[in-house]
Amino acid sequence: MPDVFYVLIFIFMSLHVVGAHYTYSEVPLGFWLRDVFDLTRNHYDRQIHFGFGVLILYPMREVVLRAIS
Image 1 (cartoon, rainbow, N blue to C red):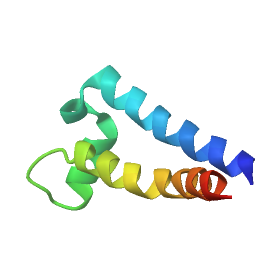
Image 2: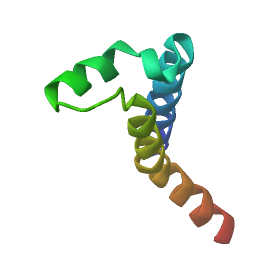
Image 3: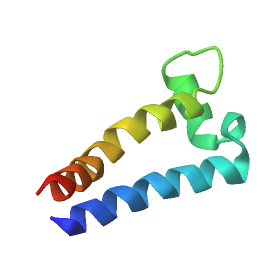
């Protein structure tokens, strides 16, 4: 299971690197999603913050379980 931990952290960090490269409001993926869902602005920053919660949940669970055992 540690492999899953590293994959999730890698995905999370990769999404942040893309956001930092373009600035979050200018990421092309965000423009695509804006057009598909008929949004008023590029919500890539919100998607990344939601993704942070989803992707970091399993690694944090592992850290807590190892700390208490």
